[in-house]
Length: 252
Length: 252
Image (cartoon, rainbow over all chains, first blue to last red):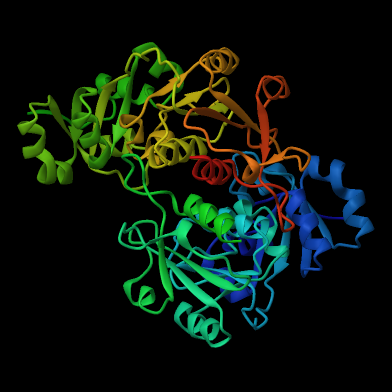
C-alpha cells in the first residue's frame, strides 16, 4: 500500500490544485469525497483513477476498495484535511476522470440553467431533476462548475443517474424547438403566465436563471412561454432551487 | 461619530461573541448584516440598537442612518472583517434586540420544523413560507438558530413578514388539532399518501423534518396524515427546502 504523510509531497500539491476549476479543466479530472458518492461513481462505471483513504477510511472501506480492484493510497489525517474542504473529512476521496459529454437529442424533459452561480443551488437542482424523473440538465454560461466539491456534494450522486451537459443555452433552445418540444422560461413578473395554467407535455424544457437577475432577457425572447410562480406573501422572490422544484413537480 | 479601529477593542470582543448561539441567548441580541436586511428591520420596527458602518457603508448609508435617528459607529475595514462572516462584508451591520415571541393561535397555515439543522435550509424554508402566504413558521427542537448569520441571510427578511416561533413541536400539534386544523407530517415512504391526493384546507399545519432522518417517528404518530412526494428517478430523496417548497405551493 502506498502511503503519503506529508502535505508537501508533490502528488498532494498536484491533487490540491484540483480544488480550482482551471486545474480541473486542465487535468480533466476532479476529486469526489465520501463513500456514498465514490460508490455511486464505481457503480456507474465512472473513470475512478485512484482512491485515497485515511486511518478511518482504511478500516471501513479497504476491503471494498480491494474488491473493486481500485488503485489506492493511505493518506495521513493531515494530508486528508488538506485535500478535503469539509471541517470533518469523510475518510475517502477518489480521483475521477471527467466524462466526455455525449451529445444528447434533448427529447423528454430537460432543465436548463442560465447563469445559476451558487454551487449549492446547482447541485440541489440536479438532485431534484433526478427525483422528478427529468431526462437531463444543461448548464449554460455562468453556472457553477459541476465538478466543484460543493456542487458534487449537493448533487448527492444524481449526476450518475441523468446526463448533466454544459454549453450554450441559446443553441440548445433552438435544438429543442426543432424537435417540437415546448420551451418554458421563468420570470419574476406577475404579467407572465402562472405555472398553474400550463398544460402538461411529455417533452419540454424549463429554464431557470441567475439568483439575482433571473433568466437573461435575450433568452426569454426565445421561449414558447415564460412562467411565473405567484408570491402570496411579502417575500420578493423564491430561492432558485426551490422555484425549480415547485415548477418541475408541477409540470411533470 | 464614534469610531473603532482595533479588533482588540472591548466592544468588538463583545460583539464578536454574538457569532455564537449561547452568547446571543445570553445577550438577547444578534447581528444583522447588509443594507436590505437592516432596512427591513427598521421598517418592521425591530429593536435596532446600534448600526456599524465601514468606509463604504458611511458613503452609502450615513444619511439614511441619521434620518432614522439610529445610533451609529464607524468601524475600520479590519474591524468589519472580524465582525462579518462573509468574504466581502456588506458595509453595514446592525445590533438588534431579539424580539419576544408572542403567543400565536396557530390558525391559518403553519409550517413546523422538526430538527432541521442546516441554517441555509431553515432560512430558505422561512422565505418560501412567506412567499406562499403562510401564517407562520414554528422551529422545533434541534433546528438551526433563527438568529445565526446564515439563517438570517437565507431568510432575506421574511422573519419580519411572518411570525417565526420556537419551542416544542408536540405541544403545538395538539394545540393545532384542538382548534380543528389538519396536521400533515411528511414521510419518505411510498406507502404514505401522495401530496397530490390531499384536499385543500384553509387552515393546516405541515411538518418537515431532519435532513437525514426526516420527521421523528413519535411526531408522525400525532399527525392526521403523513404525506409523500413521489420520486420518479433514481435520487434517494429531495433536499428538505425543496420538499417544503413543493408541498407548501401544492397545499395552499
